[in-house]
Length: 285
Image 1 (cartoon, rainbow, N blue to C red):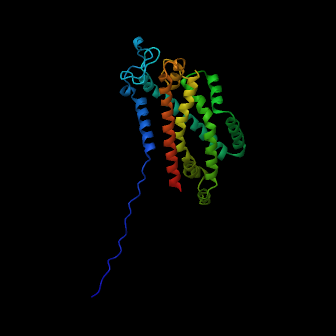
Image 2 (image 1 turned 90 degrees about the vertical axis):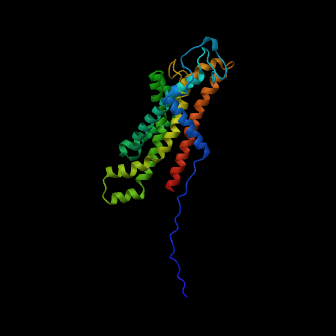
Image 3 (image 1 turned 135 degrees about the vertical axis):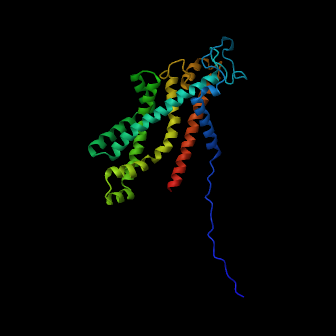
């Protein structure tokens, strides 16, 4: 009697699912809430943000006014919700302008000819020598206080840091083996730039977009708190902080809750950006 062995069957392994950490999920929910508030504030607000009620001046948080009222009886929660659009648009505008300038300056310094790369590199070093807030204050002073001035001032102030990162990444990619192989195969410089250098140089900026939006909201709110941003009756978060500073001893909620909104947005975007960065580094290793 002979025994026949069945042929070995290939073992199928299921791809390992990577669970998203709970803090990242909570941050994503916070971002989703503020995105809904920015797009459709009337869905979340409980009052008209401009309605005044002199019988409800400086009321603390309650069932009728969840986050209290200000010095003319306006509902603070509704004002924060309606101010989300302005604050987030400023943050996104700052990131768009900062990254656009960073791409131009970073590639000029890293990939341009010597006569162009050296002056641009020196310019970036000079701009990086100035503190971000001081440079933003300079541009706001030149342009005047407005939402556009905030975007331009903070965007230009943050661009040098992104440009130096993009320059270093572009230089590293240009000296890599696969770029040298592409040149050996006779590919044109345009093809190498578009298909090899640019995609790999832009990769770290994916995570920086999320990190930069939160930081930009903080910088823009800080300038508005100093009276150099959006003008009333807007309910931009930094302007809310500026309006409530005179009543901080009798109405703490006018400072705490707008400040908490700024912290939540900055923290949420930062954690999401770091999570994306870790996933990208894990995928490339």
